[in-house]
Image (cartoon, rainbow, N blue to C red; front, side, top):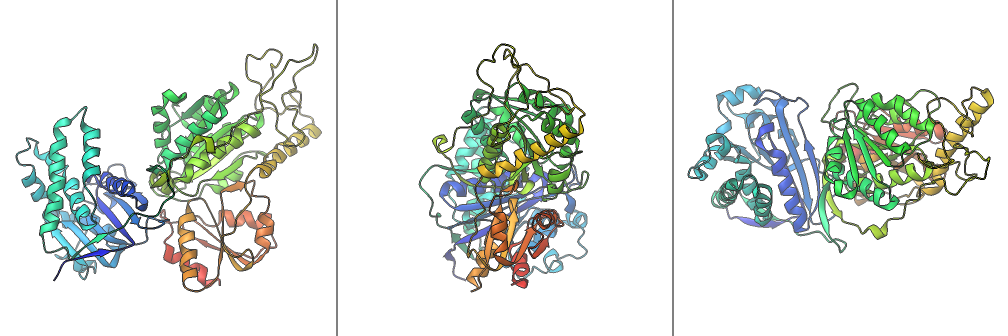
Length: 614
């Protein structure tokens, strides 16, 4: 068969193996290399839920999917063109994600009796058992070839075996015509200081993998993916957690306030705290607290002292923070609480993604306790979402819940690095001036238009005041008066609702009226946009609106929804947003499509669900 070089618009590669096989690094390198080359891309790391699952078992498989293309890429892809399976368990866990035309690359050395047994295979031929024998199979002795490649390196057997992923990456680079120079540079940057002796061996095994793939007959074709047309500027590949941290740092710069983050490590939010800790030179202060409650309480203290205060967590941690979040609402202090959602309830699925914390964000506190809620819709958008959440918190003197998701936090995409001149100044309502003799500061007296109180920090003479969890009057005096409590409850809610005057209106992609409007929020954006575009390519008309602001909703929401016969809300929970919308807009005919599997939507399942309602 004659070898062909095929120009294709996009490909999906899924790297899978045991947690120690380096598949996350392999996938990240492939993605970063493609970003620098100029491809559009989206990634989806898929970690095992168990901390130390038995080696070689399906429950211990770690995966990384990357979708690259010559145009806009909005999702990591439903199914893969190439599956790299480093052991039988990885093949068993991921064969279902292979396209009918897919290639499957496996390490032949791992497919021994012990490996097959651990993975739960019952026959001698795993490909036939999984019904993928008709795919293009690349069965290569990767372990043996890696050992041969590095036999003169001076490395021990364990260290050599850790380089299998680089041999495999070299093969993938050949198949998809990827240049190796970026990976060479990465190896030099990573190991130059502490382990320079491993740089050349890794380069060698990477190059040997590339050359091996070029010389075997099992690879029928290779592929080229041209760079995507992009707006002029400097790009980098960024994860959602990195973007969240940087967005908060940008808000610190634009508000001229130091940033403080008090957090307790929790999957999948920990990387935000780790990223902020790197940037002490930008004025960021971080504290790894002993628990979730301490994390938010230190942040509230920092807010009272005049800082941009942040705490980060996931669903279980948000539950623990709820009482202190109520304190921030009562004290009317600015605070950003980042919730990187994961599967629940309880410990649930720590490494899997869901949108199941919305109900908790809206209602999960005692008393009438309103907070603003912002949702990020893509990894790169986490930057703007974090910046806007901080801006709202500081300018409106309220806690803001920023909802992201494990899919966004761990996933990545190209990001056009912005100029800070493009972002507005943040102007907190600090108390100013000098009080007249005998005049007392009224800490909860409000701006007549925004209902926002003034922010007086400790050390301002004459502006001393009491804060805390007990109800107070405008003058800051403790009060149990029924009428005063009703007034303060109403004003705190009105303050949050007034934020709608300062956020963008809801945009409709497509006709502004018609039979069906598709609605989503948060990290479903890319999948929904891809599904809507696929339906349109099929000749049908459909409109799409996505919510980045949950509370308050954009001012034109009622007007937008009223112009469609039906509205289908698609979300990764059992219907939390659609039920919220039903309560707010009872006359709208809402339909819903939900998925609670710890996995993102597939574009095709969205296409099918939307089409049924048309």
